[in-house]
Image (tube, rainbow, N blue to C red; front, side, top):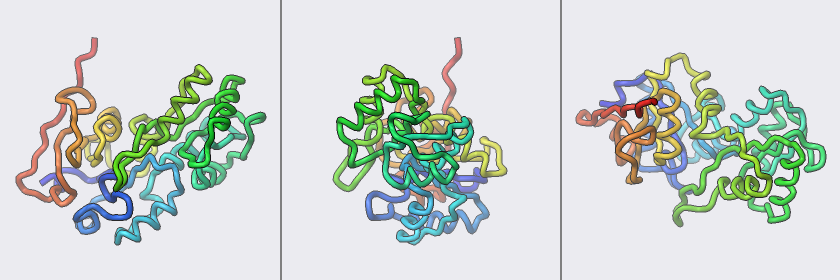
Length: 265
């Protein structure tokens, strides 16, 4: 069974561990069983809220999680800013993202005096906000986006996400963002730095081929697709296995069909 093949499991949250206000079938019992087997668990989410808020949400679903087991696009972005020596940032995002950034020692700023524009989802953002952010980037501020997810899953269906705002600022500023969250390298680097196992002993379970599967393979991690999303038959976004629900990690008949990296020219 797949659960026996790895020492560490990375789990996407939205669409894998929970959808909206409900845990996916068997999520809590699967995680408990993996912990009982001595497996290390990490939760990776492009949601840029605080890790404590994610931990609280997991507990409401009957899932225990330590702060150190949670890597959000917000915490990874904060680490990136601190590592780049950025002192002042204008955060266009919800309070959780601002909290993570400030906890990393980065001071809040406005569009006139920021060294970086940091983008997360912000329900209160207006077209004027986007225009000001684009102008700040044009004036020389770095453009950092927590992620570029176009949508995220909800009980009502896919909902517009950060990628829509990022694209608007990109068009307005003429500059591409540094993207921290999945499928890009900073978030997987942060996650791997918290475990003692090499990438070959780590498996990622996600529901989005172009985000979770692609990013895992770029990081040298086995990638398992949960759900019925269409996936390519070759390339970085091709999953090594598919499961319909998390308890299938313990299915004795489940197996891997490892992807093959595309040839380099």
